[in-house]
Length: 223
Image (cartoon, rainbow, N blue to C red; front, side):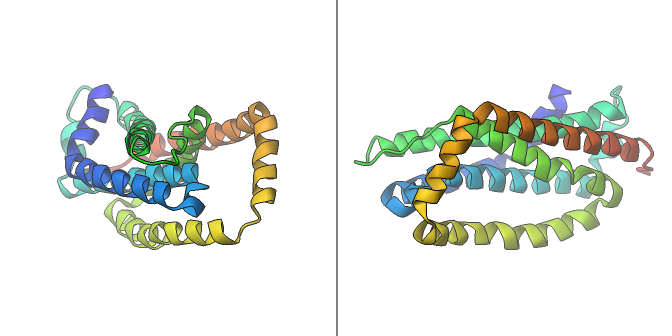
């Protein structure tokens, strides 16, 4: 299973180079702009979700284009393991990109007068859950429709993702920060309850999507 996850990471070497440059750029922007800096963890979330999106579409597109599943299915690995490895890749993408962006923020902070919080374990877990929710529920569609779904997802995804930085910047300028801070304070005061409810919902949805993906993949003809 872990070899399949490692295979996905090897496929996205070019994506990792892009991700490194983009992380440094975003880290510099959020340190130089106080209004954006207020949403520093929002930028870390955007970066992690964006890079997971790119990795998701690139690795799955490569598998589809090169009919990699015909080779994978010839290996002594159960089809359920193949599907589970894809969900595990989402987890690995999320943790890797968040940690990498946090490292970039930490390095940039060393050269600025207004350092921002680079790492937050709770935020990382929330982003991980969001990625599982966003990308996990798409695997049944991917296994059902393959390349057709990926093309549609790329088109819609790019429109949404490239609008997010502009939305975050405008939100930082117009939002009532007291209300926002009060909301964050309530969530912080009830962090365990909020995380528990959200986590249970995401796990149940992901589990249902995983089982649907396994069923579709197991019955799919790859010839």
